Amino acid sequence: MKTFSVLIHLIFIGSCSGLHNPSPSDEINISETLHAQELLLNIKDKKTETLPCIEDPEDAEILLKILDPQYEDVLDSYQAKLDDDTEIEKLIQNCENDCTCSFINSLLEENEIKLEKTVKKDLIRKISSKEFVTCSKEMTNNFCESSLYKKMEKEKSEFRPD
Image (cartoon, rainbow, N blue to C red; front, side, top):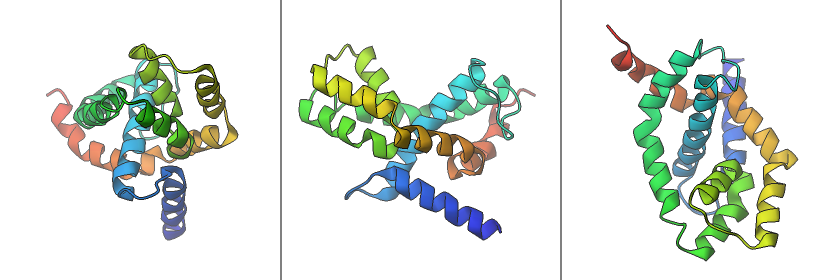
């Protein structure tokens, strides 16, 4: 049964990766990192209920500290693309497949990047699409079993107060 669960999880991650040529592990890592950041922030800020593996907002805060360096690397990577309209279009074009539409929308707003009306409508449509919502829910449901969570859990003891 555990093998079946792992197989289903891997299939889901692969279906949400939306990659064409780059290394799949890099893209999965990016999607997982972005989703984990959003999920943990929402738990910390009590906007989302806790998960079985995250008992309270303080646990989420500790995991955010562990995730921060990896998140900052991903954020820097995305911000570097914001100067190029073609790169922005690629990010929007692929966001539904890799569950990053909400993140991209927030990033564009934070950096005060204006999109053409049709491009903005497309991004908003993707954020509310069934595929994006399903992918995001699945990532949340599978967070406690994810390799990223397991990695962070191993590092968590370093952030616990004595």
